[in-house]
Length: 72
Image (cartoon, rainbow, N blue to C red; front, side):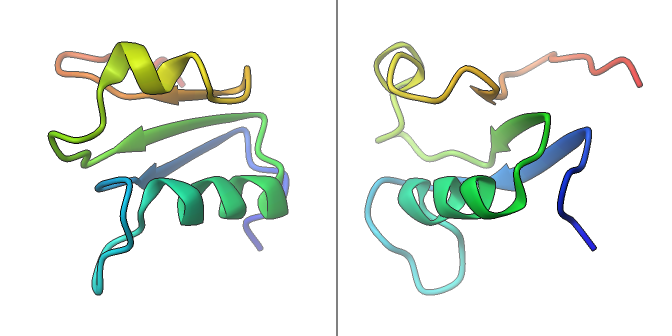
């Protein structure tokens, strides 16, 4: 039911796996499977460095940030 969404928002808590939250690699796997038009990762820990990680993400995937406004 989530395949082909216009916008997918997922958490990507940290780089290493976590027992109760998605981590970056797992979140990217969901993106690859669901093929949304745009994805935002939220609920990120301090090991997710915005500038560093952003350059490795696919073009349609972004890291959310404070005061981000999404126009629907």
